[in-house]
Length: 391
Length: 160
Image (cartoon, rainbow over all chains, first blue to last red; front, side):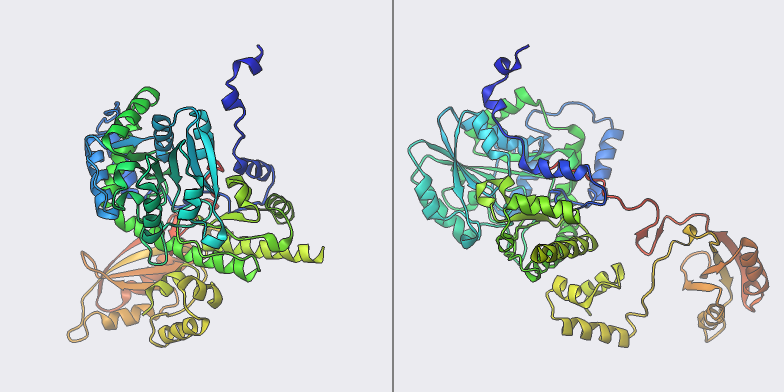
């Protein structure tokens, strides 16, 4: 077979995720201590797991409605109202997906046609650009910078808008930068978007994880924006439910209707057990979420302070669970830094460039690890920096 | 009382004052002062290692003894509790609600030694009306620390 001729050139030309490379090297070594994983270290809270178990005991082992269990959709609507002041009709505007990822994919495929431009702020999570390309869209990269706290400013946005712009992706709280967009930031963006036909895909998977007294604000809650926004959220990060593969999308009915078709044909429905567990998470999970968040907050302070003391300037991240320190003072590129650090002190971190060219000069360090683990990693990084100085 | 500070110390009492201060958003002086205050007030009673004795060859054995006692008029359970806890073999003493009165954790080198201690010492104390001895066979979790396994990170590196 001549696979070159068979395979889709669009797919074949997609690069594999840059995060993988360092994990693959790290996987061949022993004694590696990682700050690489973007996955909570907590177990799913017991009551949530138990709800999944109970559903199995009760024989809930069949397909659910394509859009998800009616009860779950209602709970999602209540939760979005309670937490973020968003109003969605559970019967026509909410769909339960396989992780937030599927919601992002379905939203992009429902709206983007070949030639459409999609504005993607970077550094950001690695899936947007490939998904846009697979839909035939043209990614337009917005380089956010440390100078503006890695936020999208109205000036940047206006500079990128064209007659072909179909969609703006808004990935806040942001993996890898830890940046958030506050109410005033979002209102300024809304100003630039209101007179256009541009839609927003707001990836709010880290919405529960904001710090320093900030609460997450959704752009859909800004006047005039609900009708032009698809909100994607999920259970993985907030409730420590990564392996359950459950997320959801909220969108105006005409958009959601099309997303449901994609979901229906490609997925059928999200896993039933996970949906039952998710009902419990939304109903009674607040306390567990607060406890995990408190723990992340301690770690956040520890790691940010640690990097700054080592001379790797690190802004205080206000969301998600990543620190994004600048490593330019070492004179190394992000990739060089990560590779040398891995070989010399066996610490795995991810180069900022894995999240877009604009990540050059930065590394991503996850703080989904115990404080002991973080302290040990910082000690090793200190040794590494010492070595670098001594040449 | 800074309960967050207590929680951190309870988790790892060897955490440096510097790290405690960073995590709690306090100055090192504040942390030192709060710890000193809590030590003075008897909120913090000591700092100890969590030891998995079973990993040693000459492991100790321990037992939980349920004591039923007749409290003395005017003194309640305090006097008998004071008597029981004087023994170095006794690790902890709790007054319990329910069918018995004192829960006494006793440790010794062998089952025989513990049994002898219960028979010769505890059960002969005046006002102890009965004892029930339960030997500990296996410890799974001690002072919040899971003793089985090696605490390995189960997460793969699959996240993108």
